[in-house]
Image 1 (cartoon, rainbow, N blue to C red):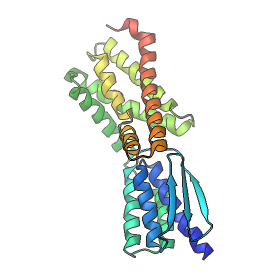
Image 2 (tube, rainbow, N blue to C red; image 1 turned 120 degrees about the vertical axis):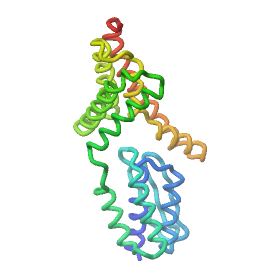
Image 3 (cartoon, helix red, strand yellow; image 1 turned 90 degrees about the horizontal axis):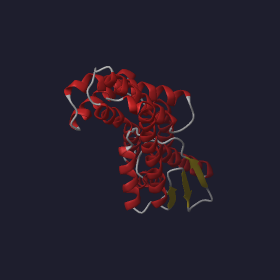
Image 4 (tube, rainbow, N blue to C red; image 1 turned 135 degrees about the horizontal axis):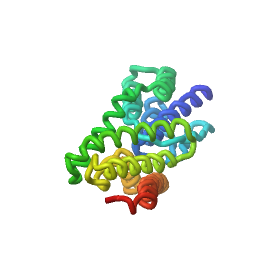
Length: 253
């Protein structure tokens, strides 16, 4: 019995951690964890979810465990995969042991889009958002290149350095430097619009939205933590561009 309770809590905590690290809202995480417990014949479970840690306990036993939430990112494919497994568990299509094994597989092996697809997506997003904000078609190809290079820089720095937010700062600095180069060599006509378009893939829009939803739902701790992270990311972007303007600003036409 104790072993079954331990497996149930481990499964709930794993599902919750995957969802929190993938950018899900707190109320959705708590709902999924509680539904798994109810469908495992444990209707009296208690869960407490924050942006940095998850607590889970069963009133029918003495078990209460804590799961640390690591790096937070946006991966809606993982959120959807956990929700789908939770629904299959509710419909008795999978057993608890199978659910736990599948969650561990999702945690490590959920496929992502190929790097080239991500790179071209960031490049096209940068270029078209530059146009949407009022930039000229003369800036389209330079912004496309800057957005793609910026995405490569961010991916490489994030993979090789453990220092959080440094990747965003360095990427913004590279974007600003490239925009200055294209403007100075007359290959593009607007430093401002190129910077605005190229930094848009870095802007934490989903994190800000999730933060507001958590705060409005009464989860103040998680909402404030995510909001603070979003502010630091936005500040890192601004500092990167500000450094370029401080160094090269006097040379811009």
